[in-house]
Length: 258
Ligand code: PGA
Picture 1 (tube, helix red, strand yellow):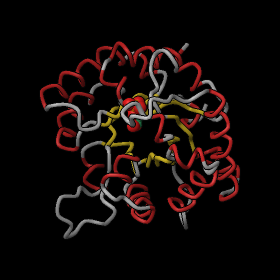
Picture 2 (cartoon, protein in one colour; picture 1 turned 90 degrees about the vertical axis):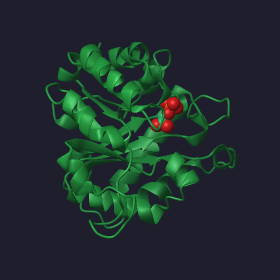
Picture 3 (tube, rainbow, N blue to C red; picture 1 turned 180 degrees about the vertical axis):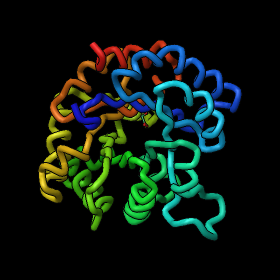
Picture 4 (tube, helix red, strand yellow; picture 1 turned 120 degrees about the vertical axis):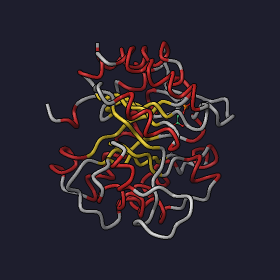
């Protein structure tokens, strides 16, 4: 089994926690998921400000450290950003890129997402490229073209010689989006196929099979994980709200380990 076949779950803790709460949760992850992380890839993306300490807590466990973002530029004069190389120094393996909250509220453009992918890959981080459509785009029958366009922009000119993860995160299905709507397994399957096709249109299929993974994010929790995560081409999940409660994330992980 290649590492791309191992299920992958990343908890996206966003900006929800204090430092103290973060360290408690990190210790709970080691306790609750240390054994499962021998079988599947389990990671957490804490606030950048706590990466070092969470990395120290994860250090003697198989849990993986992830970052919520990365700078779009090489080290230099860019106030407030953290370079890919520095994330790597902290022991980061995965790095979220283009999360919809950053695209919509911080103006992260397709061009910036592309530059972040370049920076991440150059530092041997695995970019987790978040793509998804808004409710309006979905209602206008544009979900395929929007998602394919975001993938094309992110991967333009990239040499696929190391792992890349695409996280399909329909914006309307994210738990805090306020749409009140949740996804269906059928839509996840359709969009996973669309994403797979977008990848094989761009790269040789052998490289796609070797290096690319697709995960799903959008209110994934212990009640719906089996519906969303057992679809063809879906390797795992990016989990927001439910990842803050180990007893809830446990149900998601069990879906992938049983
Ligand atoms: P959610 O968040 O699981 O709370 O919907 C997912 C995400 O935004 O990554």
